[in-house]
Image (tube, rainbow, N blue to C red; front, top):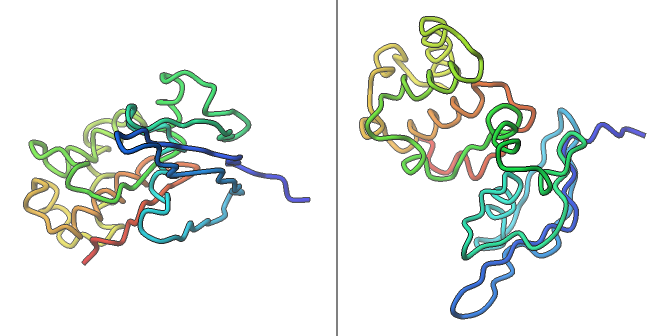
Length: 189
């Protein structure tokens, strides 16, 4: 039996409490993911795909949302039972997410290069020069032409697809164990 589950989601329920009543966005979702495996969650608009992804990282806005019940077991630990500081360590180093809308995830006052470098410096403890080289490599990896020139650009100077590529570069920068992608190719050009 192959039992190298890295993620095991059991009976996850995430609800939103609105003036019009309770919206059961995720109602009893269960799945597991083995190391090296790819899992796709498919469904209609509004079926809870994004809410499931956000729930795994406990990023549901409260209120109005709340993870009602379930287990999110990552590498043997229930992410529902650990404190936020410990969870942040998992978010930064072991589980990464590519969000659906890159414009709301990138800081408009910092260059693309600085935003990628910041993550690399913090998590990989590299020097500025090494972090810059790694950021340039990541930009090239995700298909940003003229990476050295674009390194000093700001998010508003990129198309939606280019911003999405930057988000992908940031998400893969620290080689996470799990990469959650919420419609990562929607804006790609």
